Image 1 (tube, one colour):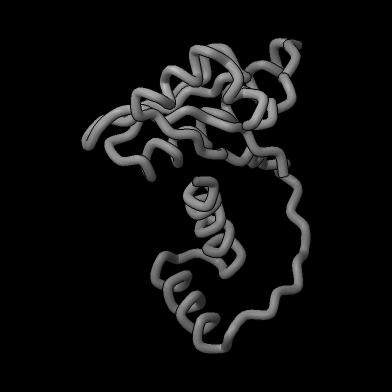
Image 2 (tube, rainbow, N blue to C red):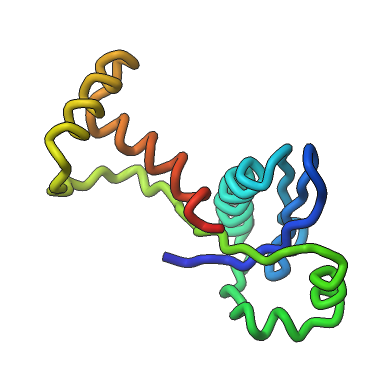
Length: 137
């Protein structure tokens, strides 16, 4: 999975996320978790629009190389932090996956999926789409 290093800055109630490798690709959130979740959505959309327009999508720069950038180094010195955001692009092509899950957890998944009027697969995909950006930090 491709992951992009981001710079997070702000304070409680207002955090910003900047992708140093992707011009104009930024996100905001009231918490760091919300900002990273929004960043994952913005990253996906930025890549899709760039590819549709025929533009190139740069490969991620390794964090140790990014840290040598004077502007980024200054932001880090002033309290900003680095995080990693995964690029998750939906293909529109479902695939079967065989998973082993604890019986109690599976029962809870099925109950919640039924409550939401979703299939088990749709509910698990919903969980994954929500959780992946949170795992990036």
